Length: 565
Image (cartoon, rainbow, N blue to C red):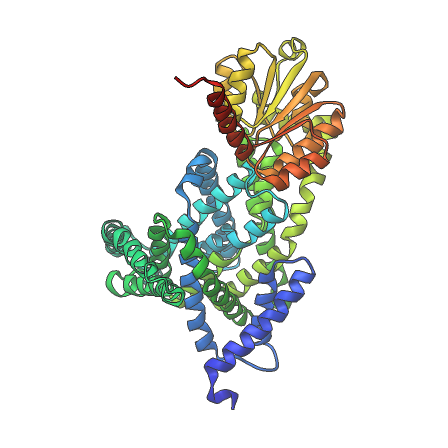
């Protein structure tokens, strides 16, 4: 009977197995993705028991890819990328080059064709945004500067992979047909030019027409006040644009869905669209991971253990070490380098998409696909442990003078005040965070002739402040080292003006641990935070809404005191 309804049986068994696997993974404090992949392995052809219909699972996974890429486009933020572009763009590109090179060298050593090695390297070079965001959320670091750098880095990786999705179909025929002869530029340049031309036409069409029509159409549907119609419209946009892009412009479903999300991101309805698409995205993304798991042959762990070990080392050590060095070379703090390295120590959804595309076009064999899946399973499983090692590694380095001196030398003098500069400070105030609020505070303190030391994670901001003669250092105020460098032992007060409430809490705790009697002034965002800081016995907590209300009431009181004529 199950064979008479392959779609229903595949959906039922796939989702049920994924639910059980996801729950078990969550209980073990692992990413649910590990559970979904294991569910796919259990109902796949390489393990005994029920075997789901592979063709239907593959088509359902295509829907999952479309909705995943639609979600990536919806959350793609040029603003977030531009805020960290100086480190994220060159850093991500250099790290991708290193990881791709390592993967290619390993594949050539194993006797694989060049195209298989390049595809393996690319798949190992890109981390999972889903896994990263979950790890950052667990450590309350999404809105921190380190978190923004890591997310910006992954945005660049995603953009490079989108470009790879475009180039693979164009170049694949020439690689597969020319294995016995050297490729020349004349072999692949015309096809590449044709593919890029179609992409440019598609992008122009989306920017000139899609950017106007898609938001306008969704707005018209929203005016009907029908929830089901709006949800249906969102799903139709994601699938329709993906299918249209593939049919009319010969580009991938993934690229079409990505641009559909990007165009809607600019509209007023972007948050509502994201909310409506999330259930579809979650459900079909789960099926995507299940379908990927079905393709994994677990016997590769027994038959090719050394190959699996090399792949895992490239993911956990090779590309993470490359990112670590790159971040330090850009003279960012040690903690930032460790966070970015830990963020990249895994692979996920884009790696699976690349592997699937490589198999489709004959550029990657089943062994390569299984190695990528094995690397993903192991790296995603170990990623929480890697994040937990950050503080231990930083503590180990800072407690050893030679190592600490080495990393300080790499980081540069923006992380330190000069000896004479520090000695001249007395009864100073430390300001952590130099954003919109921090700048206003600094200007007012400066006019009051109070010594001030600013701690901020942005190198550009610190350089600008130092050029004006201000005392400023690059660092994370939630750690002891920057606070000690800012001469907290001489400080009478610390002002916390960072935008992240979780980061603010850690800064308060670190400052009080170093100097319990210090006066603490902190920016809060809501009543809950005000209550938390009250429980921490901070000396002053200010929330914006209260200050706006107070100023307005004060103005009305002044008006009441003015005699009427």
